[in-house]
Length: 337
Image (cartoon, rainbow, N blue to C red; front, top):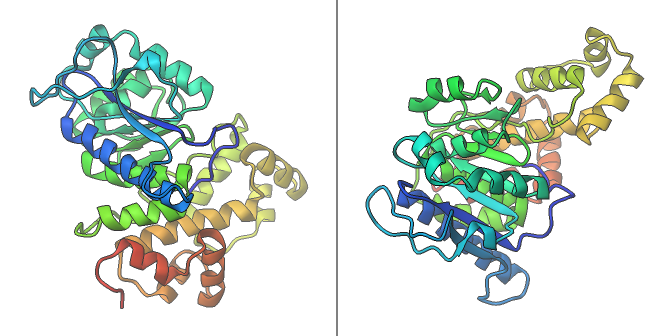
């Protein structure tokens, strides 16, 4: 998963937005998950049972917020009282236009938080808030399938990924549904707290869940926030051809660049050398296969582009500090063949 952005301060506060008509389970799922993550992170930091960061349910104004199922949320602060490093936008029920009228302070708060470097995670139609704030313009996003057409019409500049359960556009990440929200939270925990915390919490959260997501559902889009269109096209090409045999010299030539110019521009745009980027992309695909299938390590190695399973295993350990089998055991209840 993507590394912590260098501009992001250490995780100290998570804010889960609660408004009228929000689906309560998505609020409490986020609250419980990140509280659990804070306890695990605290234990790893030698804090005992003390959480290492706070997880707050925040209100959009000074009035009580009532859930879709008519329960009053136990909010702990208002949005103008917090400066979180992570914001969760839960799913809601009803008309988004009514919510916009009811809560005019939300969009400015999101823009301000985003400019300050906060990461935003949107569950299902919670993505409407991020899109309305302009934070997803020209970036990938996903939302619940029933809202695809409406979302596209409202936000034509957003690159809606209808076939992905998760998307990662750098500071704004989206989950297509409430169930895939759990995967989003694991991804965020890995990014903001480290793989040890994410794997521990995921093991508990997914213990009795049979996941059926197909490989590659997560958008590898966190390094696309740049203006080099040629490099962006190459990144998109790599996402479709990562398992193939090719030479970067040929890729550069097809896009009108010398290999030297390509190497320089790619690293300047993405922060990675092309080979490093390709390796990370392949490792992400391997993670999906390890956690969602019972394919052998050798088969997974071949499927992502490595003929030598031993080399793949060494590379996987370099990126995750675990062997492929260790990683698989963290995410699957049943042992693999």
